Length: 565
Image 1 (cartoon, rainbow, N blue to C red):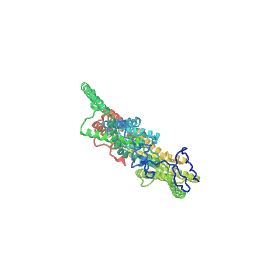
Image 2 (tube, rainbow, N blue to C red):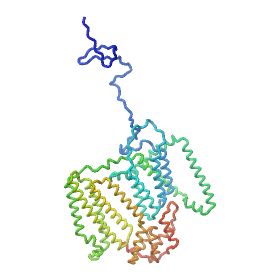
Image 3 (spheres, rainbow, N blue to C red):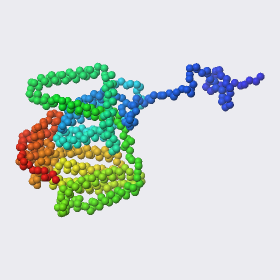
Image 4 (cartoon, helix red, strand yellow):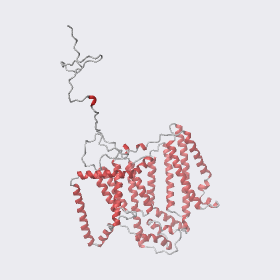
């Protein structure tokens, strides 16, 4: 009797294991299986397992995407406390109506708060699993330290200079440099986006700080009560002993009166306003430092290029036009007073003032042309690179000649009609544009300009700080007094509108001219005293000088404003 041979045991099955018999299928071997478990569902019906990511915890999806997702964790206790303390210092220190040392104190307190928020670790317990992978936070560029230092220096100008217009320019510039210090940015587009992100960061920081306050209350235990008790005891001791000392000594009482402002409704509103604004600004800055935006996508050079003739022909024609202007108009550009006097119907005002503004506009437009050509001109071949260097270099050099001409015109105009704030500012602007064209020439030789936008903005900030160091109101007064000693013409009305910084220079005048120039300034200084928040070196020196030799009230014989035109 014949029997079928036993089926071979499947691979990896133990020897002697019972084998289930199944009908043989062509091309398949019969496999040994165990009876299925009753509770196991079929493999086809099992849903796909959702594996939790092990790279977090990440922040919730943001409107800004991965470019600026925001911090994953709420604001730390140190961040919240540092921001609130700095805002309180600002509320007590900032004089909104003038420049003064209070602005510098606020700047230092703000920088200290951001350092604390960055350095002090978060003491809150970690919720959930510890992250296995950390986000690659962008390294802090050394240029950010430069922006931070210039921000403090710009706000510190109010400690030394009394000119309100100068401090306003410094304050506006400090907003830009402060945004660059916390958000970064290398290219022009990235820097613009960084500045625009600053107010947005303030609003995004509100829920972040609120979550930090909630976490601090939940995990703080009795620390908050102990801190409040410490503050209350400190304030009580200062009030009690300060009142006793003030009642015992008149000099100390006067010092307390100067240090502590009069409290009324206006003061309370001002304190609340400054506190809220400062907390908003510093909260946004801490938010940006906790989760810096990724601006690398805005810092890549432009990929779109135009054909060689499409950019070379227009710019070559522009270079020829500039060359013709410089060559044919040499007399107009550098003729000076001889050309003005020899040309019929041409006054100094028409020659210097009108021509200056036209040349200034031409200089600014040339900057835009050079920026566009540098971005879109091809540079793959040696011919392209040589053409870029020659055409753009020639245009920059010819523009430098126009810059020199415009500066010469303004210098001639100031010598003839006197120096004013506007004339000084536009002359400084023209000199800065000349420096920018020199930097463009350097970038053109190297054919790399990634460093150029930050350096250009940095030189503008340094130019403003240099102007503040030169003491512009005193410089203007010195120039006009020296011109008066040579020509006998002076506009005391305009000089009386300068700030207290000009008092040492105006003190060189004598008689009626001195009284006309210094009496309005002296009246303002006497009527509006400074407390410690508004202490200013320029006003202090002016008061010290005028108190020893006060001017007399002038009559109606003060020189008019005929020299302004």
